[in-house]
Length: 374
Ligand SMILES: Nc1ncnc2c1ncn2[C@@H]1O[C@H](COP(=O)(O)OP(=O)(O)OP(=O)(O)O)[C@@H](O)[C@H]1O
Ligand SMILES: C[C@@](O)(CCOP(=O)(O)OP(=O)(O)O)CC(=O)O
Image: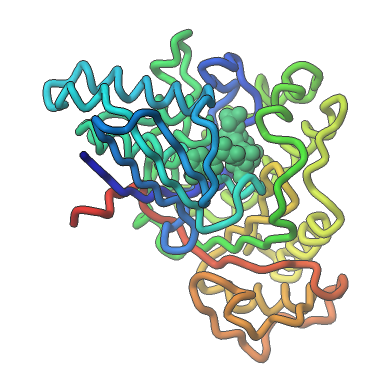
């Protein structure tokens, strides 16, 4: 019997992947860029056991047994095995043993918090460890589990290159800068709703490809220049440029969702109120201090610098008062001392009580890791 346990991070895109040119191989229409988030606060943990005595493959997700007859899961397994089979280092008999996968996300699954990204990155990395090929390029395999998962195989800021080959061999993730490059970068996730979402990203983007004219324009005329500018902003640690492109890309992505027929409505009134607060905050300060981005759900992901976190949280708590504000369960992740004074409240509206469920304060982090043998 053999067993490995690994963790893998979530990633949140600042230039979104939305639309496939090949649904089977999960090849995207455009490049995307994301930050890998610290596994200290959000992660998937996966244990894979292989044994010659197992009579079937099994997977348990968050304590519930799921069907193994899942196309994406089977494809990841067969791709890792195919690669391992080509490798001298691998004990070939193990490739024939059935496996039991036990995986848990320490955050809500299928709620637009990128669980498919950390989930498939962790699965592929753990399989690679099991078969001894963890040093190989694995992002092209994780991509076939869920597109965004390929970016979770690297630390720091990561680009998924769309590639041009029909077989997807060059549709891989690469690191742009490591997490140590811009250590002041912080992420605040404002959880508006953590229930399972109605329209999955897979289905939503497929409808967008079929029906949205705006998506064609986004892909042909906007994304490449934003990728170039955002990469420069990262290298130069230029928050003003980073923040502007991040917000514009999120807004364009949601415009594409609305241009889809029937429309995919992911943001809600609370999401739009958060957008208002952030623009107001940046206006008061005369510079971009905080940038928002929204995935396929209503939850906001804010990018900001460490020095601004206490004051921004103070304003968020003013705009969205919460009965649990003093509880450690409300602001999860990196602890923050909330200051008494700061940016003038007069400039801001109060939107109503308990509109946010909780917040997660985290930073840019490392890629997948094996945790059972050190
Ligand atoms: N730990 C895991 N191991 C294996 N598969 C997982 C894991 N976590 C999630 N998944 C798969 O991902 C699916 C959820 O993906 P979905 O894209 O609907 O939501 P999400 O990833 O939370 O949101 P988004 O990708 O839009 O940010 C689950 O139904 C499951 O099939
Ligand atoms: C809005 C997004 O989060 C969409 C993620 O889509 P998925 O990677 O979940 O889709 P599939 O490839 O069909 O599994 C944007 C992004 O992460 O780039």
